[in-house]
Image (cartoon, rainbow, N blue to C red; front, side, top):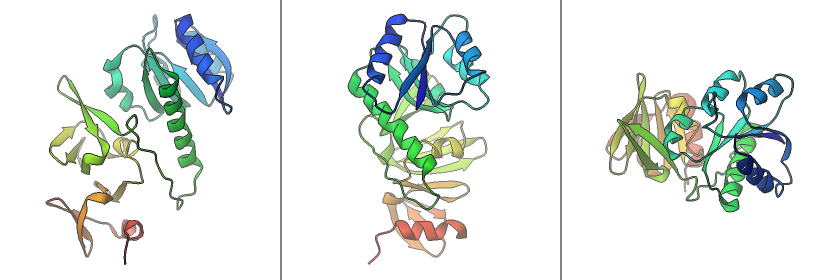
Length: 238
């Protein structure tokens, strides 16, 4: 797997490069102090992974991503914690590392990257087990001027509602301006299943199943005919 590093800080590039050397399947092919130079390089070369800083002179990391028609997988490496929600909007972003990063945290990002590749390589009927440790078991939503952490196992269901989604957890309901497709990409398929074009459910939260519907908490959720077989295959039936 070929990668490049884009960061205006030489020391930050050196730290990432040092961590990469311990990864047998990743090879650094180039590094750049700004996004402009990287764009010129990518116009003639392809890479599998980019380690990308957010704050750089003249051209931010997010601006850089928007210039790419088919961006590779990206791991953000930044000193700013305040862009986690914006990062959530980009499907190509695998992880969000906050400087100073430890080698242990870096390795967890690589584990997550490997999971993405397993999902992409696996046939549609293959079940892939997703690791849900403390580092990857959460996501953030933007409510007003606040970033709110959601523990993934606490989510019972997600419902599409026009340009918004409704996220129901064990204790609270949130309305977020995003799409069902985007949040589906962030939820581990070992726990979650899209049972209807408007619903994703946590299969561990199912209370009852009757005909073409399931009971999640107090919510009756429809199950489309095309998704019923997959749902039944998930259940531990006697």
